[in-house]
Image 1 (cartoon, helix red, strand yellow):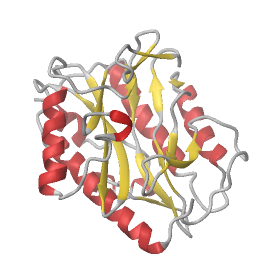
Image 2: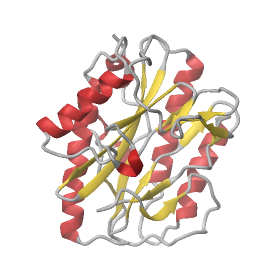
Image 3: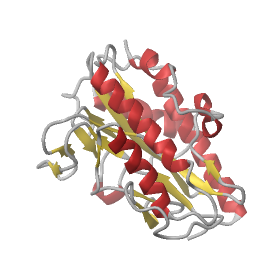
Image 4: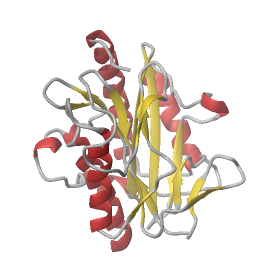
Length: 271
């Protein structure tokens, strides 16, 4: 369950490369692109430029390099030529990358063009909730502390937390122990130890927390049709606290300051 220093170094490299994929997306005018076009661009960048492997492709029979979850899609949205990103949409891109046998996993919700205040607030709160959870990670803390911090922030802002999907341990396999719930009770759950590596990836809904899976067997949507947002990072428990292995350049210092969605996100997500 815990990783050795040489393994953490390899995972940090995978995380750094994955962060650069989101750097590419930040600079891409997404409005007018189909989610299948985004998938092809990301796969080419991972394979061709980064000499790495999109770890999601082929996992459990999945055929694509990323998940693209638009508006009321909670997670596992399947890229499609028919799904064209347009002004006012929110879209989460969930991407994995394997380098030297180790996998990193991260996701980010983008605002496409002029997004309404309700959707913008949902995205901002979800980003804040992820960081609330990350800031609880340290040796001796418990997984319940992480989930409780996320749930508390979501509820304070009037949003619900999806319970059917959670974070997970990660390393040579995409999904390892432990499961990391995004709700819980402080002081309960697994005790965190130095060398543990896992994802924190809350999904918040504007409406109720209930979800359903569509007929394709992958796409999970809110049962009431409300908007959903998600953010995700891969983190490692260190001797002094936490290291965010998939940290993006615009997030440096985020652990030490109030959580604000990087200003670049709305600007780069539009046309």
